[in-house]
Image 1 (spheres, rainbow, N blue to C red):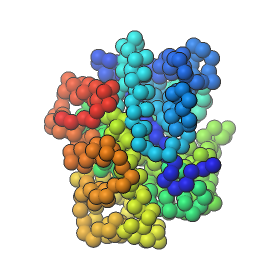
Image 2 (image 1 turned 90 degrees about the horizontal axis):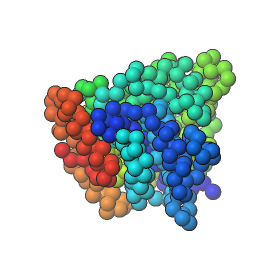
Image 3 (image 1 turned 120 degrees about the horizontal axis):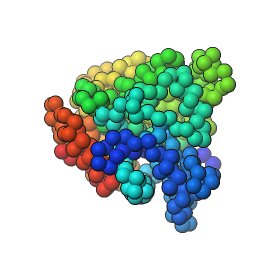
Length: 424
């Protein structure tokens, strides 16, 4: 049975595998997954010792909410940890994810490797470091590479946290989609973690999103404006989004390898195959506790909107995509200091005057009944000190060299290993 609105969640966290000393990317995901599949209690469809695409771990007697999965991504230097199936609450997920991180680091240690958090590796060279996943569904990755060319930051250097929100039927989808469209442009003010690329400060707190929007520019309908269109039911979603995307890519994909729901690359996508709306604009944080806090804040904001705390559904649905997309890019560049000025958007949060995105989040989260004490405490740190990108900039200084980048990202790797938030 599909969970109802804001009663079923999924979380997916991507991390880079790096050399334990130099922090250079290492293409070891297949070896890591094979080692994980050999661990006691591991579940996989693969043969012992062979390359596998997925591994699951569950505590003895655990129900689906206690199961965590590991899987490959497009490139060999990235691994993803995820909940398996919808879970009834976000509280406590960080501890489960932290166990996966600890196990992965233990398995990587003999290989001279470890996991690195953050949404973009600060000095990865796509030409040198990109190696596509060569196992399992490799034909899908090969098709992406043939059509778009995957040796670029937009493909090999984007680590995100995907938040899945269950819904049941068109009425719930309409309310959820309206709320997600409004909150989506503000998310980088909480979650930006990618201020450095090619060894240099970029001027963006969330450079990942800036790169993301252009990685499939050959077929603009795939990502659209990143903020999704105002669509409120499955029939219209399939007609206006899915069918258009599939028609546009068909001449380049005659075998239909990519003509599935997951080809849609908007910042929030409907996954009718799992009856969930998947938010994809969240940069992965420095540790699972921070990821959980950001996800919980997003859910609380969505809850207030769905309850029509400040504005009725009709007013929420009236916001045009271009306005919301413009706000997204201001927040991606400036993070919590981005100005929010559109009167209609502000009115949907009960605000009548322009203000910074960080202050708007503080107003949205002035009350947070859905958050537990740990989530709320971690969120307070983020609201006070800024998103991870802001704290990284504070630590790096105005002109960081490679040794300074390595020192700060080494501290980030320690944060991930130890499950603590980053403070300069």
